[in-house]
Length: 409
View 1 (cartoon, one colour):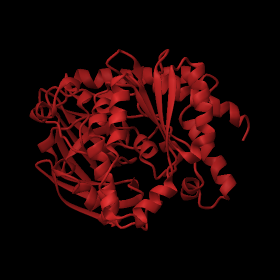
View 2 (cartoon, helix red, strand yellow):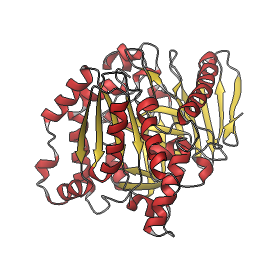
View 3 (tube, one colour):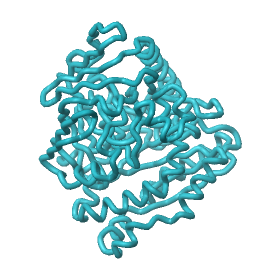
View 4 (spheres, one colour):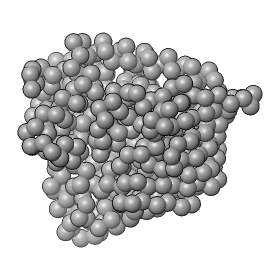
């Protein structure tokens, strides 16, 4: 691959300058797998060059994770180090920016019993609930990015050698995140400006209901009176504009919790907890998932929905045109960060408070009073396709077409 090191530096710069938008003397917290060390070294160098006050790297290892989930006592899976959760809360309270680097391995935990994975996921979610409030409300700057790993590349490009697969995946990632542009930061500024234009239009419409129709999907939902469409980037409590996901192509809001009626069918695989769920349907009545099917990963889906009562409801609805950079690769990435930005999607579980007026300052009860769903989990799954038709009901009761054949009308 030509100029790999140069593009790697550009990617790191994007994560720092566009993703978390690191400010002078700010603490940067990096969560990363040990296999990402070569990239983290570049990232740390670029962070200090950008004026970081300090950089703290929190390492983890997927083989150790697999070993623990395989043979550790079950009780160990129900515990999470509270000192670590408290540390994250203290760093967030001090105004740290947080970056998560992921090397997806879609089949990492396919041989682990579902109840063991569910126990570990729930323990993590409960312990980190306090810290999660800082990110879900946009109080601090945070971002998530991915880099290739051989297992991930082999899943996407099964016909290629390990070296060829890694090269292909890096090339696709660099293109998708605009790191291959001559001026990636300027390219992102133009992209974010386009997203803000779409948000202004949607927020001016004040739609009351949305209707989704495609093969296997016939769903309606109402939107809260004070809903807000959000996308691209957001401002943290200090007014710094940051971009939570690189890449990002979506605009999203929250549905009214008890309003969903009908059925949706997934259009891309969902990788959750190291297991892949494929070709699944969810049926809703008064907002609640009352029935579900899955050709693959049924038990994983079942345990996700049974995480808590809020996991029986939807917290996010997002619109993404089929004609978009990730979708146009014609690849399935088996990773939510990429696949959700190639397809309209919903999220099982918690709503983001920032998608309702004043929501960032609301507590759990007040959010629920406004029609928002609360849960320990927030898991996006894809429902969009080239055949998706979406219409909306205006405040006056008129119906407008907003998506036709998968794209903005």
